[in-house]
Image (cartoon, rainbow, N blue to C red):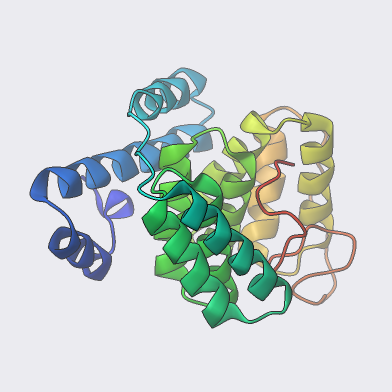
Length: 233
């Protein structure tokens, strides 16, 4: 497995300590499939992306140990998130995920909170886990692309944005978002990835000269918050 597909060593060590060896191996394998979806999407290898997607979809959904507690914790997380109480929100979303490991919404929000905190390796791991549970979740791909944009990982930002468009429920809206990023985003890595994604899908695209802008210009789905991060573009 190449470096781009490896889970950060510290996170992997934590998972191995916290779960049986077979489960840790499954987790690493599944995240490898997510990374393969990113790499194949960057070259518009639709067959390869679909193959990895099918592998992930074959996984049995983890059973909830306490569905009611998971729902309550998730609602607490949303309330804290709305108040910008990030530490409390993260704890609540993590509790929801522990009570219901198949809750993709909880782990997706945890990834968003990690990203807002600037804890990018943890944000990447959480968003990848959301995609293990639901590989066609366009908004998780979009958030993952933002993580890669913030860490200057151009190739993976492209692949994640390509999957954002591929799995978007409303591709016209997704195209609009991509074009806005390509024309207005100040961060070079994300802006260029959006431009390359438009070209990848043979959508109208034109390289533009962008003046200095805030990191999150108005009118674009922001990089640090989304009204409903579990809703696809």
